Length: 379
Ligand code: CA
Image (cartoon, rainbow, N blue to C red; front, side, top):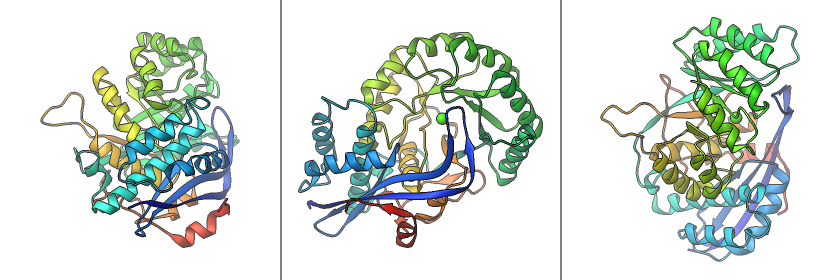
């Protein structure tokens, strides 16, 4: 089997309502996905996390490396892509392009062997995971705290047992929102906060201290991903677990977070940090530090299912007879591409999402949706 075709697709969806977080506003969703086809007709799908047009250019830069290769040997392909980009792109969107290709190769490999990716990764340590709702973004509403409380109640009504909210507007606003949401959902629902690295160490510590009485399950990206020491210092000074890693790349980057004792929860993005091949290595690395993993997951059903299979394979740290449930991030903000591109639809039942047992990612691409959202493509 040899790789014969590499095609990219830019999918765009203008949102009905824009929303924002501590860094910028979203008014559209724009995603680059890749289809890799072999000479026997089998194909695999991948997705990159980051600026879609740059990822698309990156995939086409890497294309000559992979055409003609055996897709089963995805680790050797990974190494050649890494080696030939190392000198000028050790981190960032070119790694996301590599990640998209790697995920597509795993999907293809799964289809060739008629096995789910999680089994190919070494086996399923669980067949279902607990989605946590990512939402509670900011809007320009005059009654934002009330709206956020209602949105949180809506997630609870849908069956979510854990919810992540945005912070990073100002400490005063953040605490007002945390109080309002806690009052609405009570203390049986897990609540996480995410600042998207909006704060200085001093500000993050102040917010953490004020938020501690509200039983916060983790404080995500409190400070800039550039400041490993600040993560470590904050972690020492608050009882709230510290999470981060969605802006980190490759095992070499994650080693910095781990050896500096920055995190309780490591949040690699499979579609940015090096694909499933590298995610497996990062998980091995994290296991040597006893740090748990809840991947950052954004984008379409392709990225979501890559994360589902990866999480199914993760070992619990420590192991025991009754292992706790594992989380998957489930973005609940408006995204018609996520809802329509892949089939079957993502479905939560009794608070869980099942790991697909079909071959590869276990999903099909809805070609009508692909055409509907496609805006530009090189080929
Ligand atoms: Ca985040």
